[in-house]
Image 1 (cartoon, rainbow, N blue to C red):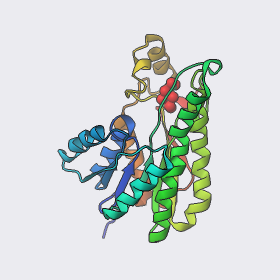
Image 2: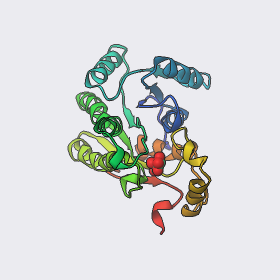
Image 3: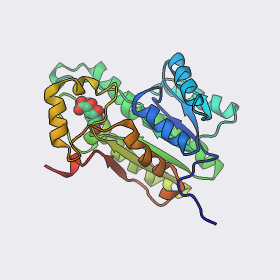
Length: 256
Ligand code: GCO
């Protein structure tokens, strides 16, 4: 009997920051592969609107509006999922913000907000998910979303870069502690993908031209370009893949 190594039927995936952008793309890709999805964002109305859209496509969708930077909110969200009988088998730590400003003009509060949203949230949500995956004893999948800035820096995005660099090594720290529990922890490093976050860059001709020249594929990525990689890392096909980061960047990191 052939086994579909990419079938997510019977599994449930929580994607943080999934009302729009890459997160919503990840959720739709996982749902298309058979997973039930739990959508998250801070705004309940935005979560409900995104859920309705995916339900209209025939997918099973749960709604979990909570602040990923709040330890109490994360704990309560998982308690609510427990009470609803929703077990998270797959976690995509996607939530993130961008703030483009020279470091000498950056306030501590601005720095902390990016670090909290882009890095600390992955610890808070990952810890709650892993506690339950370990208790259930049937493993799990955690996929942290990094960036090209997990490897290289660009001026004016220091807190984002520091956070995404941390995501790469947090992925390995999670692997060190949780792989023996059957939890695979890996990361995806998206290249320059057209989303609301990057739209200001797309709309800047000099930056748009730079991306197209600097990318061997000579184009910006689209959220759909990431669906195959997130399904692979969420599926049985990657059961012996641990602590890795896969760059989906059109080749940008591979060339000078
Ligand atoms: C920027 C962009 C990048 C991309 C992405 C690249 O200002 O340079 O926001 O950070 O969002 O992270 O991998």
